[in-house]
Image (tube, rainbow, N blue to C red):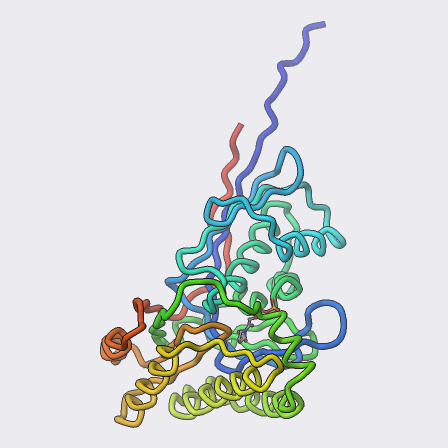
Length: 329
Ligand code: 2P0
């Protein structure tokens, strides 16, 4: 009997994209239970021009991971895959991820990275997860990644600690000017910094209770689009978090001299009447959130500060999404 021709197995490449987010009410600290549950609620904005693009293919051997074309052994990626495999049927994967911005330098690359990864795996393996399930899976890999599943203004809080979208990206358009003051990876990764702060800072209990109140107020300011109140609240949350970090043992100082100079310039601009406020994460970059009409003035003022290497601007962006699924033979 004639043999049927052997068909080459179709392979599919799935491509997903996600953007980082920056928290206006910060998450710092974890609950004491498995699942990477934050100890504080948080409220963030997703940015548009900074992007992680992640391609997923079936691997021929074991899992492979490339970041910006370099092969990497990344424990957090391995842990993310292992956690997903406890719930879903996922074959060995080849993952290629690329960022168009500095990695692990306080620009939330783990947020966009794990949001894009979970989104790509969901489509590639036909898991059909809801946005809430995508967010929960992303959270287990990196708390802030849960928020990058969504666009615009995003909240994450109890009881289920999945993120939700408060306002889409076009409802209250704001611009974020980012002052890059260093490009090397931070010395203390966020998870380690959070552990140190929870274990050693005398301010930790007050941080937890006051952030719960900040979160409630932050939601109200976002829903009423009250820029002045949101500005005061976001700067206070940021400085409280850095006070907590600095009061840890060893003290966590993520700033450099230019970080502080940028903060002072933003405060002066606001005192002069410009609608702008700063926020700083676990790294030395300063993010100045402003009304779009003053973004050029803010960018010029920050770019003129010694130690500012460059500035980048972003509007509010969309949540993680699949860009393409291409089948090849
Ligand atoms: C935030 N950060 O709310 C805070 C503010 C940094 C400072 O979430 O341990 O990489 O992977 O859950 O999400 C950065 O921490 O931490 C972060 P893990 P993640 O954006």
